[in-house]
Amino acid sequence: MSKPSIPKGTRDFGPRVMARRNWMFGVMRKAFERYGFQPIETPAMESLQTLTGKYGEEGDQLIFKILNNGDYLSKANADALAAGDSKALTSSISKKALRYDLTVPFARFVVMSRNDLTFPFRRYQMQTVWRGDRPGKGRYQEFTQCDADIIGSDSVLCELDLITLFHEVLSELGVPGYEVVLNDRRLLNGLARAWGIEDQFQDFTVALDKWDKIGNDGVRKEMGERGFSEATIDCVMQLFDLLAVNNSTERLAGMKALFAEGDEEANAAYEEVVELMSMAKASGVPDAQLVFDPTLARGLNYYTGAIFEVRVPDAPIGSICGGGRYADLTGIFGWDGMSGVGISFGADRIYDVLEHYEAFPPEALTRPQVLVVQLDEDGTSHALEAMRQLRAASVRTVLYPDVVKLKKQLKHASELNVEFVMMAGADERSKGVWTVRNMQTGEQTEWPLDEAVSFVRS
Image (cartoon, rainbow, N blue to C red; front, side, top):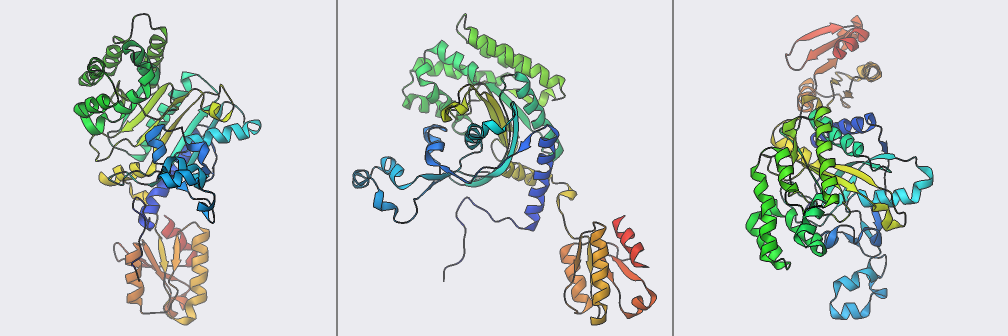
């Protein structure tokens, strides 16, 4: 018999991890609702055609396809099968796929539910997504995204709302040293026009997106392989030179200097980014935590305006959040002109950062507060009544189910890390009291049941 196992890139979550994850989700959910976002959920599976073509060529390769039910080869494209053409074969053997992110399913949801929604519509969604990435530090094939989107408005105030949401949630979670990093795809489009590479814009952003992994030399090689001229590559390197400038305002001005003269679209985007950064700072986001990065590209095809990432510079993983403006994502499903902007908190990477820095607060761990022990068979009804009253008073309570030696029950209490043990043998029952043992100090006191309940609650 083979040993039980789980697929690479997936994890089991035990009680300790789940308590911390639930605490994180609780912080995010309260913040989303405080900002007026409404919850939705979408299926784990989507039609394959819904997902393909939305994430770029490399993203499409990471989508988990689901084989058709039954004899999936019976309707397979015979020519593609014989030729070993997996791309042509896929559409004939797979009609569904696991969702790659929450944004594209959200756009599909909006189009299908538009008659039931009030616009601008503010939605939050906290669900699992799947990607066929190579597993590594902070990189999983199954992970949870926590998204917030505003659709139905072009106003820069929507971007401002999401930046301040980043700041509030990450501060409340206690993520150390995070930076909200921003750029704008319209600024990158301006550079593409200035350098004559508009028809290679997607390749340009894909190469930029890889800089943090492959560095300047790697980007040069990548762009060369994608057909960019040496002169164009030299122009692109000017963007990375701007990273040596610490001041975000000066970086932004340095990027503007690279635009073609008279590029009204790029200059308008520049003014909007300046305004957004100014409003964010006025809203309480510290200078040190708001960073303009001219190389940030966010390679997903659907972004058209402001783009965001959140990074923790000294953490052993990459970005922990992301997002951006999409001018017409619903257009791919037949409803043109619905602009939106959204962000995603990467719950698993945030967890990894908090664990790396040992930054989880004590309240993130939920555990039983009281263990009620049984000393003899005659005390069971008393123990049940004590457990009932404790739980009615919102005290997390466990009853040891068996009458065994007290030593074994106290050992169990220590393993559960409870605060108190409550017990009532024949002597206590005759006096109408309970012995309450403080598991930290070992001190024992006697109380009537109602006073014992009040004592452990305090």
